[in-house]
Amino acid sequence: MPIVYQKEHLSTKITIWEITEGTEDLYQLANLKSNELLICRQFKSESRIKEFLTVRALLRLIYPSENLFIEYNKDGKPLLRNRCISISHSKNYVAVLTGNFEAGGIDIEIMNDRIFLLAEKFLNEEELAFLGLLPIAEKLQIVWGAKEILYKIHSIGDVDFKKHLLIHPFEETEQGNLTAELRKKGFEKTYTIYFEKFRNLMVSWGTNS
Image (cartoon, rainbow, N blue to C red; front, top):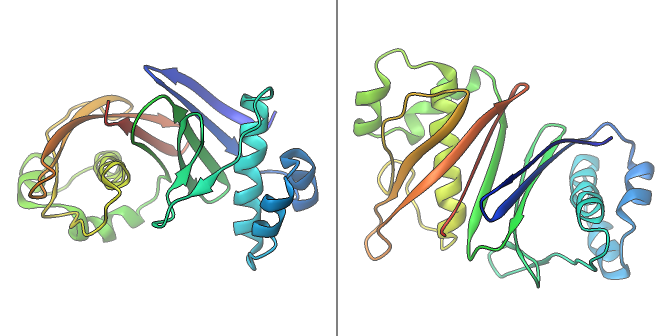
């Protein structure tokens, strides 16, 4: 079974697919409509083609009786006509968040030490204060994932990860939730972001409702 993780949470459904199939098999599973096929043929990278096909195959599996088609707004945000959707990729994993919410986001990241090199680009002084001088990789990954979710929910752009996004202190690292704050002038709001460690992935998700 290509789907390796499924979870229904509040008004959302989280689904993760591990890509082990070849491109031809994914074409069969995706069963693309003609307009989707035209889009897919524009991609040059095989990994991008596989990601595109996997998302469509995943939707066909979890909503077999619905005629779903992903559209994109001017900012490249994916849209569905009868429900909301957010998509994330990491290596050979594709995650989709669907449900009845106005705006939401999902992020999956394969855990690795690269997060330490990126930390100075997204951590502000308040976060450094509760993370400490030697933060563990899981906590850094959770903070990064939460900020990615806020960025996707906001979806207007011009967001500084240090200045405009604040993650409040949290303790759990395997599974839990945290409070995250968007502090951009005119868009100030507090959200609850959920996270769960699965295999070597950190999975994060949240909505504005």
